[in-house]
Amino acid sequence: MDGERWTLDVSTVILHDKLFTPGPVEVSEKTMAAFSRPMIGHRGEAFKTLYRSIHPQLQELFGTKQPVFLSTSSAWGVMEAAIRNLVRQRVLCCMCGAFSDKWIEVARRCGKEAEPLQAGWGEAIDHKALDRQLATGKFDAVALIHNETSTGVMNPLPEICCTMAKYPDVALIVDSVSSFSAVPIPMDASLIDVLLTGSQKALALPPGFALFSVSEKAFARAAQTTGRGYYFDFLEFKKQQEGDMTPTTPSIGHIYALQSKLEEIFAEGLTNRYARHARTNALVHDWVRERGFDFFAAEGHRALSLTCVKNNRGIDVAKLVRDLREKHHLVIDGGYGKLKGQTFRVSNMGDETEETVSHLLGCLDDCLLAQGVP
Ligand SMILES: *Cc1c(COP(=O)(O)O)cnc(C)c1O
Image (cartoon, rainbow, N blue to C red; front, side, top):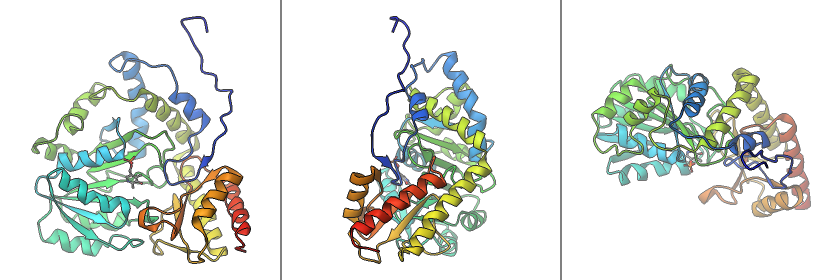
């Protein structure tokens, strides 16, 4: 160090347990190095250049011509924001697992009327049931989680969006926290009004940051909705983005990490990235079938970025998770909430490859053998 300048020592290898949990997921050394870059002011030219440089790539990832916003909050911040900006009358919450079940509570705590469209855990949202609810004319917004991360269900977005197209006055809010960039989600073509994602899952960035985009229809709606607050006011985000800035001081480290990640994503190519996730997911699926396990998610509705395995063989899931960590320094999830012990979840989000996923599956076999499970 010469007093004025410093460089980050990235040569130190930090021994740690590698995360194969469906969030947060493993963050690469390269991303961490970008995350740790020296700070810049968020009202200066360097910041504007940074935001401007990543914006076209973000629009491409979102499949939108609309502005893409950077929120220094976790995903729930933007989920709550979408409710506060768009719901005037009543929101229909599509619920089929721990994350989506929570959305109705969030809406009610924001002082909005909300009703459930409940599917069983492991099932997907039925677009015909959605149609019946919307036909009542009671709702002005629908909240949907694309990938229900707790159950490993990917909801059928094309069918749901087709149904939504019949109700142009109803806004569609979509959480894609664990599917964004792992599968294509074309926001404009799907007529999605708010598409949001968090940093720590499919994007493999450190937690604490979110990205979202808002349709013209949703901006118009927000303009007529009171109680938007300030921190999450969509119109404030829009105004600031026009000057390549954020409403408040953002997490600069996250934006550098995002810039680095976007470089990687576009160097790999979107089609290749989607194909890689499909392949690594298929490896996990093959393993599940070959070992005699079942899937928790209904057939035809299984996520491509994580797998929720049903413990139909009665193994000791807590021991499996513990052994995997202690012997192999790898971490999977032992079941979310009420599914603890009855399921375990494995992520193939982010940077995972056939090689790393195969390694994980081999280590799982090793731990199962130690339990006497052939
Ligand atoms: C993890 C997750 C969230 C919650 O994200 P936070 O970062 O905790 O706000 C929301 N939705 C889905 C689908 C998730 O998987």
